[in-house]
Amino acid sequence: MENSLFHKSASKATPPTPYELIEPEIIHLKKGYSIRYGERRPRGTAPWILIIGFLWLIWLYVMDPVIHAWYKGEAIRTYLYLHNFGAGPELQNLVATRILSADEIGILNSRHDPVQDYYPSPKAAGAQATEITTYIHNVALLHAGKYQQLDPIGRMRFLLFIRTGLYLPTSWDFLDPSISS
Image (cartoon, rainbow, N blue to C red; front, side, top):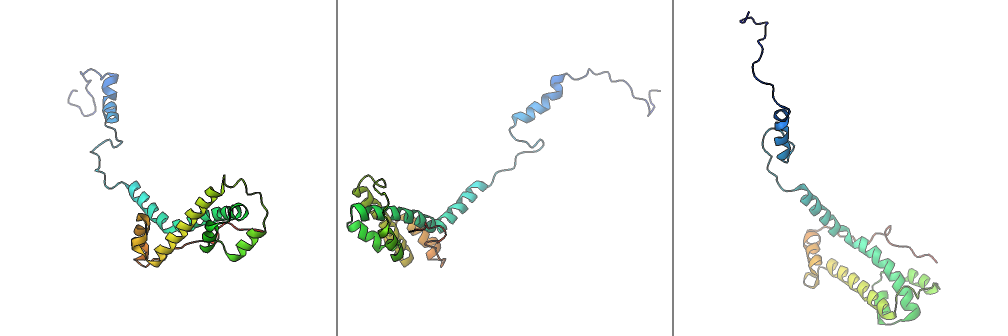
């Protein structure tokens, strides 16, 4: 009966120990990757670097409307403070940037808000007005194509967008703060 196809002869080997049964699993876990069979695939360019680069390009394109909205809110506060406490050349330069329209300036001139807490001194408000004026001037230089007068980010934006013919938006009305009387 030993040569029968339907009869299984008893194995004379000892059964494996529990450690021998889980040893391949331990070796697999120590490899540090989840593919059980075969070697790791070599990594190419990390996709997150491409995503960050793409988001950086989007930010370079839309940064002016976002920053313009921020500076317009600051311009409102700065104008109110300088108009009430320290009208000087900074106020005239701020008005000359046209970040605030003539109608908005008229509304702001008629307001009587407690603005003394906006800035610690007229000097601080003047510094903010100078910062806003510099930003508006740099955006005008970018759109005018004055490459040599731009900062490094402005030069990069000029080469990426202005030189290639892509229009850069400067402001979006839905982002800008509104002035109510």
